[in-house]
Image (spheres, rainbow, N blue to C red):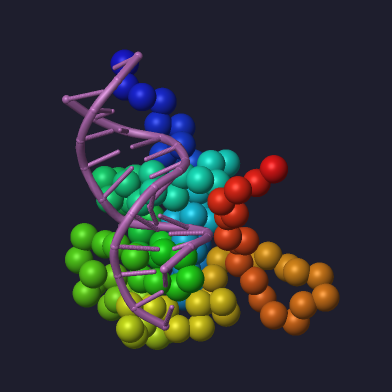
Length: 121
DNA sequence: CCGTTGACGTCGG
DNA sequence: ACCGACGCCAACG
């Protein structure tokens, strides 16, 4: 009958794990779900999902950009209520509040999921 | 099966 | 730094 929706379930289970006061990106969720290039599809899932207990507002766009939401003002408010600063369409200090962290050996700075490269070999 | 739809990401200008 | 163009892909009809 309907589609598998395996990807959708994986995506939602991942988003549920984003801690309060932290954010992740559509692309990072796609990568964690095993489809690194499916960021756009993740956005579509966020848009239509109705499951409760999922912090949809903690999923933002690459580079700390705020990304979409049914009601953008509410997304900003929810993030602000968790101690994040949102201005200019960005979450300030994105690198310090992103999730999950990826330890880069030898770097004192925290980092997030590495961006994709267009051409690979 | 094929076309459309986007709460996206990357690169070039 | 800010767009615009283009690529990508799961879900749905």
